Image 1 (spheres, one colour):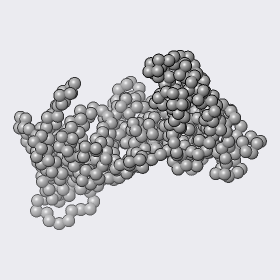
Image 2 (cartoon, rainbow, N blue to C red; image 1 turned 90 degrees about the vertical axis):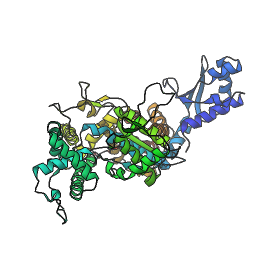
Image 3 (tube, helix red, strand yellow; image 1 turned 90 degrees about the horizontal axis):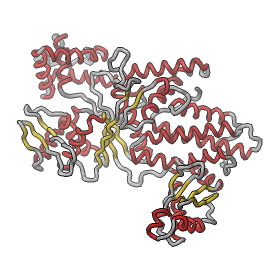
Image 4 (cartoon, rainbow, N blue to C red; image 1 turned 180 degrees about the horizontal axis):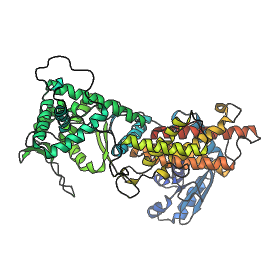
Length: 585
């Protein structure tokens, strides 16, 4: 199904051609003055310079060619040479009716679908998820769903932080507290226990205690470094404990991500990339890209065209230790071998932008991926409190993600109880869905790269540009449809007779534009802007137009069909954003 703006542009371009002008000037755009028209074309202004005619003359000549076009209700020229269009009711109704019957509402899938790896987790094991993990999870999940909607094969990878000194610190601390455990007996040859020697709650205390201790206890710090080395060399007992750390941590991470309605296709981590480091280093060195600098192995990535300094990418420190860049480059090798992706997208804090610029440049120079493979990084802004500073607990610490979700859910639960619209049985699930909408829409409605202020009162409001408002619109439409005594699927759309009906159809007709733009820009905020406009048009329609009480059965059925299409579009869009609507609110 063609995008509506393309159909309009094709018609107007044809009129330019028939009038003797280059059809390229016939590009139509959405009107920036909806009080005057619905679409417009400004091509007569630049054409005037080429054809040495007044813009209004060119516009008038084009208008004459459109006199019999059934697409438009009206075509007007406005000085100095604008063309203003209003779509005919019949054409618009036909387009929306075609959307109603088409798969994916007529939104065309990607002509050349790709395998895309989305790296949007990045939590460290043995640590609780906190608000700092929120944006990558929410934005990444939505982008993954949008890419899939357009037919791509998308692999969501959590990319766990499960290697390095933090593991040595935990092992050393556990050994200090429980030296009798079999993991630390070099003569032990039996099977290691299936039960971990710690719970997730205990594990989450062990790491910060070990980290703090290493800063003041040199002997302990040395033990932690030695434990890290032995682990990475494959020491049997340490590997067994590492597996216990991973099992306990991943179980907890899965539970917390499930609460966010976020899922990953692969649960790989830095440890999985270690085997690919030698291969990566061999490739880099074979292309004579690496040089020694103060004992470290680095790759210069500065280009003559750079307007700012880009430091060399360090692959190995002077002591032979690896860094994040080493692991990320090895992970690219691993992903190329396992998935052959056409694109790899990373979601992290924008403060890591330089790191990924360095990594991508090395990957390109070393040809770790084919030239056509896209390497992309979205650096998101911070979630701030009302004071404009990064969001904290009341005590000033970093808030755990499960605490934030619980606080939002409790807040929403109390608001629902005040309205007394949901039964006690439905209350927990309803509150959870509204809380997720408040949290996710509050985040996704902002441009990813920008900081934003987390405002629980505003995000949880049932009015204004919020997730609960969108859900309320869906629920209200469901309520209207439930009152219809016919078969909704049999209802036929008729041409609009009111301004409100036509406005709703116009917004629906722009679904393809919104989703395609969101897809191309990896920008869920564009979907948020679209459904907020759609919800507003839907609310105005059913506020001003009698639907169920309409005596004309054909009109009533048309209204119902329009409402049902609106519901389906809204529910499709919020699914792309990562949340869903309850039955009642």
